[in-house]
Amino acid sequence: MFCSEWAIVKVTFKSAHVLPLKCKCWTCDECRPGRTRRVVEEAKRGNPTFFITLTSRRRPDLTPSQAAERLVIAWRKIRRDYMDDHGKGSIAFMAVFEATRKGWPHIHIVARCKSFQEMWLRERMRKLIGSPVVNVRRIHGKSKIAAYVTKYIGKNPHRFKGTKRYWRSLDYLLPPPEEPYDEWAEIPYWHVEQRFWLFVAEDLAAAGYDVKAPWGQAPPYLQQPSQWRPKCPP
Ligand SMILES: [Zn+2]
Image (cartoon, rainbow, N blue to C red; front, side, top):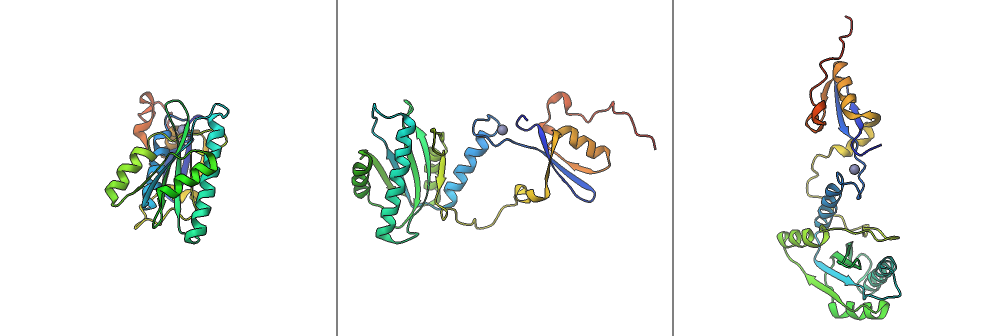
């Protein structure tokens, strides 16, 4: 299957809704912008209070992926240490990998916590993986959060072998103030048809359903409902 080729379909009494089924892969040109947007939205939704950057000192005996794994392990340990000092649930976070121009990993973290000392973090990072170069910034206000998140979290999440592009603690996402209508939330009522979505939509329309579909997204040569289709006998 190619991205956006098959159909995802919801049929109700008289109407039908057809959408192209997306692959949702980071490596897909069609889907990457949407995935990045989602990471940015999630980062903002956590109402972070601190922005933290962890770097990894370049070492000739490590591959970028090995350096990335060491960063993940170091951050896990640091977060545990923080909670030992400040209490369970005292820090929620979301972390995103980025690569330097030379392909070396660093991590941008948005964290929600009351305080975070750069000196303490630097010492922990020096002890754990010999990488004391860190940055800790306290941020106030929605517009500052949005600006930082767009700049660092949404720039170009990178996947190193053996690690995730981004991850977060279970308690990071706060419920949004008002849930916007999300048709994907209704997915239990949808089913997948393994045919080109436009043909599915046209068939449903021909069968008398009032069909909602992104007609405009169809390839140009297919945008008009087919005129040549033979009429069914009465
Ligand atoms: Zn895709």
